[in-house]
Length: 81
Image (cartoon, rainbow, N blue to C red; front, top):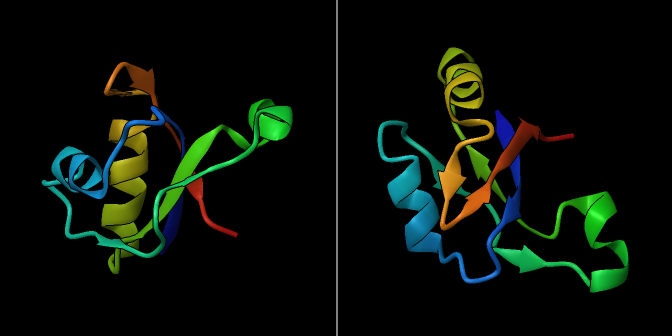
């Protein structure tokens, strides 16, 4: 299952994401991207996608880590579309 992680601090690195999700077997499926300031609020600023093969683990990761703090930003997680 692909998961979109948004509202990342603009200084977030791939290593930061991997560390935050260390309890889950993730694959970072896109580079960390930052959207322009004009559409930042709508899209969630800096974001990336991760993939977790097991759907139950993916949903558990969303339930447990959505809203948690990563580099002073409360991350937002949702199933990718």
